[in-house]
Image (cartoon, rainbow, N blue to C red; front, side, top):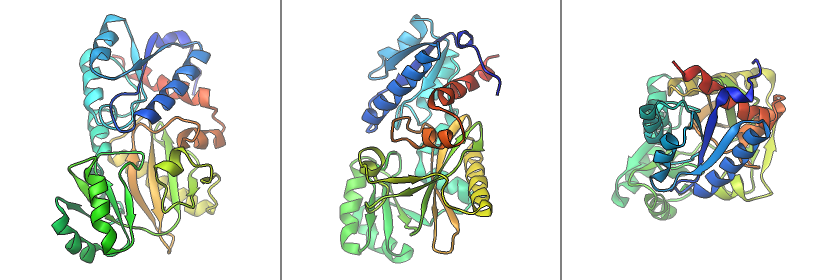
Length: 311
């Protein structure tokens, strides 16, 4: 990709923080992105998108494009993207529809199934009385998740029926829609995408029950293996599957697809993330480094994609 002069971007707003359950992660990601843009000579300004005053600032202060680093609801679910389109401001990442779909675990899985992509069997639970029948149908162990949260917030792994109601209640604290998913037991991978192309996959290993919030952002015991240890054919298969899963949702720009491998080595896409973390523990920068792209270059390449949005 040809190098873009910093002045071509004009005045850039880096939106981070916000009001979602992922606020703290977003603040870390946003400050890292802001510092990288400023090191690159971009006229970038950080805006904590709490409340609604920030929307008026975008118009009043003459911003020309937006780097979105808002994780979770309010930043990653299509609402923000729609507001920016009304303002006529180019922005990083996926559009309204793909952002909304990617934030909704149930509809992402339904779309993948319709597109012929593998994803673990699941059910939606509206109350605790439904749990025994769901467990009988799907089998144990199970993953219990809020349908509209990221960063593994509110997620539990359940090994027996006695744990299921507690896990349901934990997820329901964050979302009225609770997804219960067949647990694929095997290696866990994540595949970052940049301009629709997969970067080197990362294998995740943690002593925790699963790759939870602590393992993602706090623990020093999590291992990130990149190269991921797969042979060339299997790695190509994994990357191709992630690219198809990303494209099926209509995602663009950059993102991440999380994938489990079962005991037979079959790959199962689990979730998509359309505004991944950009912290010191984050996976997209890690994969980019292995591909020879340093953090500052990665951030500039993501922002450069907004230049193609202007008519």
